[in-house]
Image 1 (cartoon, one colour):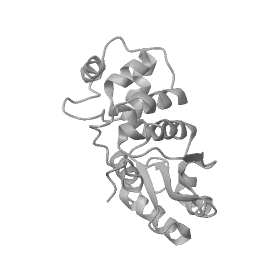
Image 2 (image 1 turned 90 degrees about the vertical axis):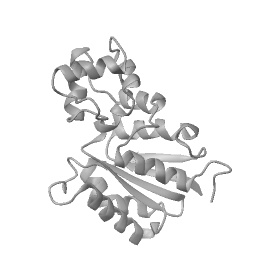
Image 3 (image 1 turned 120 degrees about the vertical axis):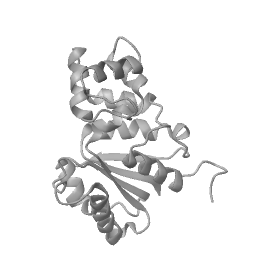
Length: 209
């Protein structure tokens, strides 16, 4: 039996997750074997169909994660982020994954995670300066408030700084951040839940309870 299967909503998330899972030591869990897939129906597909997609895999993998964005999933106006996670998890529990699966819903969307390490982001996009210079540039334009962990509109701000550097959004950006970012101080609740699940399921040697 393999360790983990992950169902994502798109290619950006898939590459970012693959990069993150390869850095197990950095994030505090043991090295694992894993497979990451993306759903053809994107965020709404993960929300409504993760239990069907993953049902046939419950004997191949010890654990499963279904991950999607809050914005665009189709329920963002009816349920809070945690409510959507609970809905997905309840379906997974009823379809062979009892106690072995988790849903991660990123609010508002994946772009919120690129700000976990400002210095890495600045380097990945070729910004002329470090993370502090990037914060200052956005603050001067009213898009970032000192003391916060990320801009108030993560996606719009990412596109804005990429345009400023004549870059475009690409899957390689998310993969690069996943490969190099130091997310030890990330306060995003969805990211914290993801890392918490990985550490609980796959503890480093000597950390098992």
